[in-house]
Length: 137
Image (cartoon, rainbow, N blue to C red; front, side, top):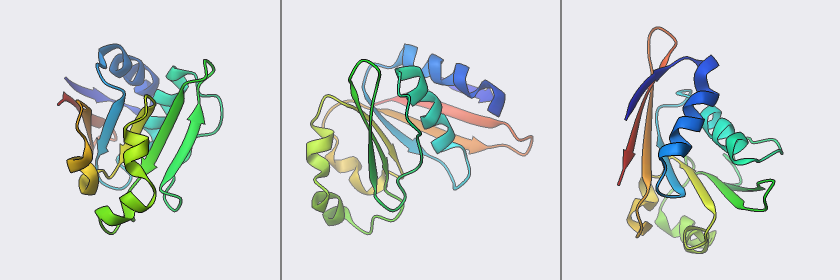
């Protein structure tokens, strides 16, 4: 699925993604400033997370709860040097949970994903809009 959207449409895009989701694991790709965290905030809101969502750039992972008690783990692996650092934070335990998993900068841990997942590529356009590719793997 390919979507061209403006920032004002991000909540509708999040809703559409969740309606088509067949997995709880989402990998987010895009340059710095492409809108990954903004989309994750909207996805979390659609899932019923009420607390503030921010990128876990330095902590690597933030945990949130939905109103129904489901867990959501938001990873930002930009600063991850290698896969050993992922093991150090116990990433396999997170990935094996039944939680929603949103991972920004997932390149170094893709080999750890055994189940299906969604790949979301976001590209900032010159018009200010974003082009999103939603792929199920």
